[in-house]
Image (cartoon, rainbow, N blue to C red; front, side, top):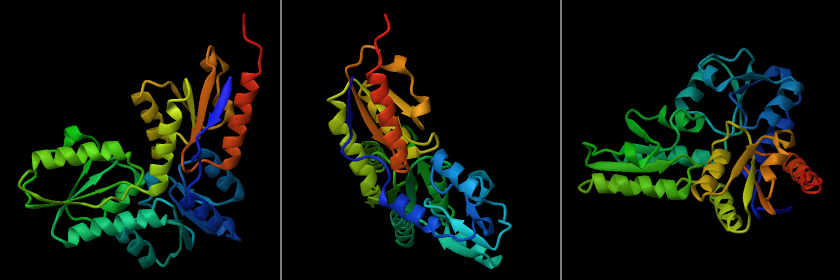
Length: 285
């Protein structure tokens, strides 16, 4: 079995920067991470082992007990930032700059008097941070959810990890159902997400199956899996080498390997090594 890696895979600069910031923290026990730093279970386990306090993403309404609070790469709303500072908390901010740009885009559209349509996963922590600062909005997960809106001006932006094609389909539906509206679209899909998706597209035609490495809660990793499935290509979402099953690759001559933007280099290397081990196992008769 031949293994081909995508030419773009794994951690983006936003995740690397967040990890670099947290690595510089001298007293982890004095810091509470406000949610999941990144959607990667291996990273979260390592942070817990180092002594960081962590609030689950569904517990973020709870006020952290520590004086210092670390804001995750997914960001928070200005409303939540004000709440934490008002309680006397000191913030360490690891928000990805491209997430900050998405927040700014939503506020720009709002300031223009537009009804804001956010394309993304309802309930996702990044989306939640964006909509908490909006008085009125709609979150759209699919073209089927688009409706005719009673607003003369509409503004559209995206969760940063939205697949480009999916966003285009929803924007097309918005335009079709609101032909009289003044519609402004700001592209907030991040370049690392686009680059990962393009690299996957290039690889899919060369392989018979794909292994996608990343956290089970990682939206961008999940989107890579769905992208493969939409092309009819078998795709296996694993968090690490222990999730691989040799029987997946019976009769497979060429397998692709890619990874989400919050996946550690060491995890990708371990999965690749495990795939090579599977490839050199004698076939079962």
